[in-house]
Length: 238
Image 1 (spheres, rainbow, N blue to C red):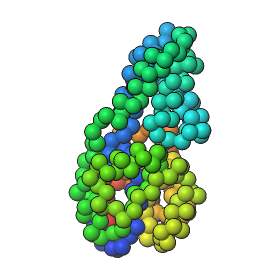
Image 2 (image 1 turned 180 degrees about the horizontal axis):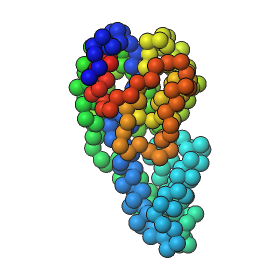
Image 3 (image 1 turned 180 degrees about the vertical axis):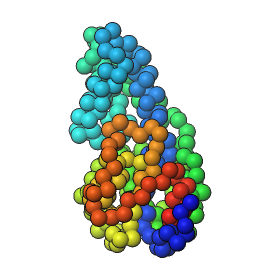
Image 4 (image 1 turned 135 degrees about the horizontal axis):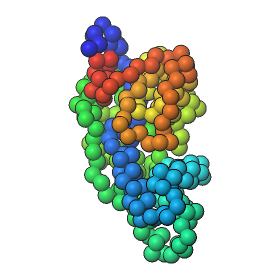
């Protein structure tokens, strides 16, 4: 266990990712994709090959339409049009979109140790939520989660790159040396935060979205990079 001598001083700015850091998210998308692949029942493409096509379609849709349920539903429809010999009828269109929008029916599933850890950390530090996606969807999840009271502010952004982190730093007048980005995505949470001059804490998730995976790059910046094996481990450092 980390000695309390290594714990940071009170008054740090802790910026938290939301999806798959505070609550489950990608597992529901994976179930929707599995239902879509089963429904497509492609005669030539294996399920893995269909996934590869879908990921490419998702990348393009994100570039055009951003993140969120609408973009994902559109990706499923576009993938069906690309791979299926069957014409896309209004009924098929509604069925495919239904795979995506069923995700919204799932109750919030807070990840282990999150609620009690945020409650404790908020007594010593300034907590911010920094997530990307559709603002209505993300703020709705925050409201339903019961965690909103722990945060001094919540930011929903179109993309989490170094420029976004610099903008957040400026908006809230954060001191870089006292500010940490905490999340499960090397691509969005860790590497660009380090590049922007923040510290970062990598909290692995067993089912991180394919498009968010990557190598953690400590050399991306001069900030400290910490790894914790579970969310509760943050209490040892902060």
